[in-house]
Amino acid sequence: MARTLERPTATGPPAAVGRVPLLILIPAVGGLAVLLLPLIGLFVRAPWTDLWDHLTSTEVTTALRLSLTTATISMVVCLVLGVPLAWLLARVDFRGRQFVRALVTVPLVLPPVVGGIALLATFGRAGVLGEPIFEAFGYQVTFTTTAVVVAQTFVALPFLVLAVEGALRSTDRRYDEVAASLGASRWWTFIRVTLPLAGPGIVSGAVLAWARALGEFGATITFAGNFEGVTRTMPLEVYNTYQTDAPGAIVVSLLLLAVSVGVLAALRERWISGVAP
Amino acid sequence: MSPPPSESDVKGLDADITARRGDFEVHATLRVRPGQVLALLGPNGAGKSTLLRVLGGLTPLTAGYVRLDGRTLDDAAAGVRVPVADRRLGTVFQDGLLFPHLTVLDNVAFGPRHAGRSRREARAVAAEWLERTELTEFSDRRPSALSGGQQQRVAVTRALATDPDLLLLDEPMSALDASAAVTVRRFLGRHLASVTAPSVLVTHQALDALALADHVLVIEDGAVVQEGPPADVARRPRSSHVAALMGLNLLRGRADGETVRLAGDSTLVPPGRADGNVFASFRPSAVTLHTERPHASARNVWPGRVDGIAPHGDVLRLHLAGPVPLLADVTPAALADLEVGEGDSVWASVKATEIDVYPA
Image 1 (cartoon, rainbow over the protein chains, first blue to last red):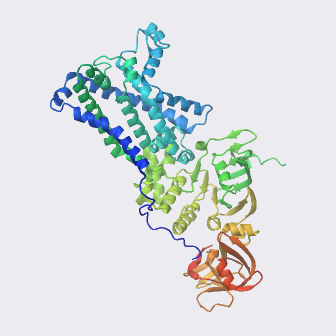
Image 2 (image 1 turned 30 degrees about the horizontal axis):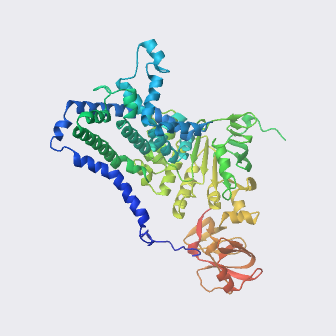
Image 3 (image 1 turned 180 degrees about the vertical axis):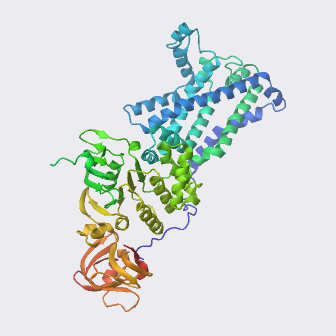
């Protein structure tokens, strides 16, 4: 044989390159502590004895139901609006694409309370769009459950768009060409090829958006207000309870933590782990 | 310049293509009659895939035209460019590119489905095609459960199932290992025979062109450097470049069981029984050189004279002139041991097991 190259038969443990330097290890452990200590504090201070009473109080169950409903609706709205936007950013060359992508990320870095003010300025009763709408139909969105969904969508949409755009970019564009060469229009290529191939990325984007919507506080309380059963979602309930009943706030916080972690864990098993090859 | 022939007088593919890819320009005239296979043969980067992408509508041409059965698909002067989806093509890509989220059946049904058939009809057509190509057993599998060769056979079936007006094959064997390539080549040979549309095959393997094509265009640096029936291109590479780009020693002869008669009284011992007109191919690295005639009886041994020595990767490629012109790859050390230089006479031997003999 002319050329038979020796190839390593298996990927063994990495070669010994020395111990982990303390200058890296210490800050790393510190970082972990920053993330974990507050959660531990939450568990330690929780009033475990009357936990159940707190959890089953009307305020909490109402807030939980409202949170789950609005976060889920926001996620669906994000999917409907965000997936096409992500596709446009990932697949179509148009002038100003970089600029549009930058715009999408603005709500990501914007303090949510500023987002709430911006929403008020636009959709509030005296807002740019809100005023003419109120004058024409007598309808105002502020301080309604719809406003909660609008606020959550505003903050969650960038998460979904960026995640889905990344997923679309990492799927092989040649599948689009294959579909076209087999006679599929761009629409059907999107429906039957692009979307299914980006499926895991879309699911993880949706989960991110849902989690962000579930935790939304600043924009919601500014734009939608704090009315029990209408706009008081779980984070607002935590804030409310804390004014009078600190242990109660801890219980609600734990519940919120459990719901988010539970959903993330359940989906991670099925989907998110599937994203990585 | 004579005007291009009017639309109605050419059946099949009639194309005069100038296209650009970056700074690089490729030009070729392609005529393929219905049922015929044209091979575009050339090294990587020669521009043959660009030509195929133009035919497929994926890359615009900068000058010229593409016509199929009198229908204009591209016309640079008139600004015509028919979208990919409306060209009625069947395309087989280098690495298959079966849709990973669909079963084999649904992959094959994809084309018929988008030709306006209902889901059920499309699946029926796909099932029929899979039966014809003897792949029915894989219908319900996902592509990831198939070997590379199986995937590529499904990809060919998917292209055929569109009942295309033009079949495009882009390096269909190059991503496969040798034995899978043989299977797919045979598969293509069998099923291309029943294709009534013109086919264009892009390959950098001379073997593919010889086994499958009716006509070969050798493309180098964006231009056609040799053109003709594949046997001619194989037997008479008009430049060392064409021989080099084949990357193979390729001999043709007539077999009568145990031996193959080559041109000029030489013979070749095939690895197994062979009959009729055959091609025999082997890699230059399979050739061993000797200064004395070797005595091993079952070997293929031919005399030759070293006509040229050139570095080729990390070996030296020797051109041997003689009754059986050969390319031989040897290591610099082996050549030093032989004490052979240009103009010296040598004996070349090739083990029968290193030779691939297949019907011409």
